[in-house]
Image 1 (tube, rainbow, N blue to C red):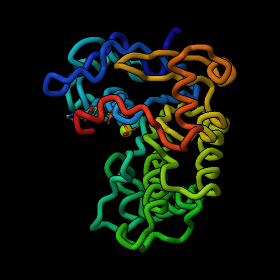
Image 2: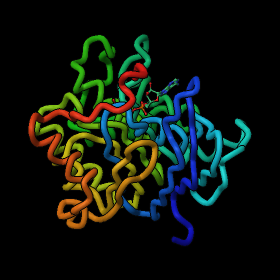
Image 3: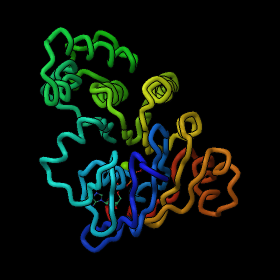
Image 4: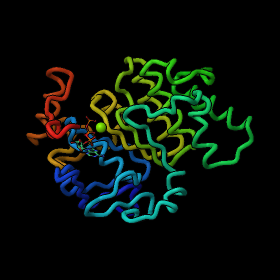
Length: 260
Ligand SMILES: Nc1ncnc2c1ncn2[C@@H]1O[C@H](COP(=O)(O)OP(=O)(O)OP(=O)(O)O)[C@@H](O)[C@H]1O
Ligand SMILES: [Mg+2]
């Protein structure tokens, strides 16, 4: 793939001697919606954090939006992060700041917009996640699902080229989960945003993904489009999908013994 939005090549990462990533290879094309599936503790969040420089690989290379970021210095990350949004697994809001301040945070950090423009943008982002008019509320006053959606609103505030979503629908009711799927699709269609989605929500996965990959034992065990993966004879893929369908949860729990 020439000029991918994100590429990981042979990425390895261990924590205290426990190998989590053992040579991850993946490339996500610009404008693509790419989903990473895998059991709890398989290293999905760790993968996302490598893409955006929150973790550094022990070995291998990472490129982001045309830049080799494997050893990028922190000051050089500022301009690149301006172009990326991240929805963290726990919503990771600032508890002492209002919803307005939370969503406006990246705008104020990276831009010097006049206040009315900031407020207009915040209002549009809250509208997009189905929470219009909640600017004055504090995170403690919100339900878990609302916090999650405020996290999504913050991630898209700067109209990023690339958005990383770590379990964006966990804890949402079906209507709001669908709203997140529609938002990912709309960002892709209108603005050609590249999306990388980590999820256990197969409805979301099948609705938005151009391609999906299964992370298992520290490597990409399989990768393909929705039809290829759903029809895959790969035993790891079958076991993953059947494990989810049996009990709505991910049974495979590799790595959990290590305290994920
Ligand atoms: N900063 C860290 N320090 C030490 N260990 C870590 C760190 N981050 C992740 N790990 C370990 O790496 C493994 C993979 O964690 P990760 O959060 O990527 O799992 P995951 O696939 O996202 O799981 P889940 O679906 O439950 O979110 C776990 O064993 C976890 O304990
Ligand atoms: Mg995770």
